[in-house]
Length: 366
Image 1 (tube, rainbow, N blue to C red):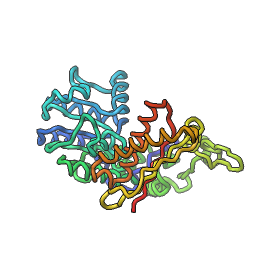
Image 2: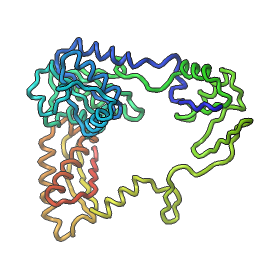
Image 3: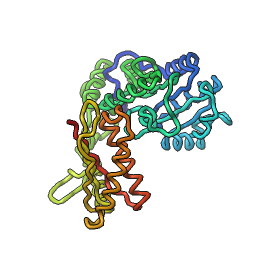
Image 4: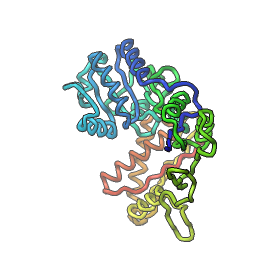
């Protein structure tokens, strides 16, 4: 009666490449590299993790999973029977030092260039146990999500500078889309021959392209429904029609504001109410990464002003020491520098005061 079909790749011609292409790419990488192999992917992509494990087993490599989310997801999938890992294949990170380079593959997170992800820390030489060296191969087995290109590009550059060979979607078939392309969408329309059709999942332009495809497959224009979130489609044996709209999603009311307070804002307010805020002010020279001024510390709702001088003095000393130990490459990358300052101060305040204020580094590039 009604087909609801994913529209994400409705603009893309032909067929979506099979996951077999990824397996073939992995096979080629493993066959031609005798050094360590690091594969970064989404922690939720259980099938991709299985592909990496299968090729690792074939090439007599042990598997080390690095990153809390990927370890947790893998363990859950293993317990539920969605993953198969031969006995003694999955080792702990601590075992890395006992393995030869050709005996290991590391599967980790950070394919989107997240500043404090495992891959980011590896790329900037901040990871305690994994240090990039000549002969390493790093595979980014995930799509570059729009908006993340700059962060991912920085990670790739950091890895190349440290001697690694980096393989990603633009240079090898190490990732394929999980969404159907035009020919597969046409195939589903032809096989099901629905009376009514609703394109879903995608931006508005994707829905339009999908509806145009449906018209070419002889579905009448009046039987195609492009809906917005909250729209109601009423179906019966004889007809389908839009029958109104409901409020969709959460709506927060704040003073005179209606629906303008998002969940992230509420989380920030909760943290501020519990532990206050600490600002780190730092001015650096844009090109060289040289410190021009700071770090200066401003706190609100964290400690009484009379009692804060000693704490602020200690924090300044800690951050100054941290900054002086960083290389120029990291100092010139403001997003990574912010993440490093935030994590350092967060750990210090948690260990010394058992407090978790909101920490906001503000870096001015001059």
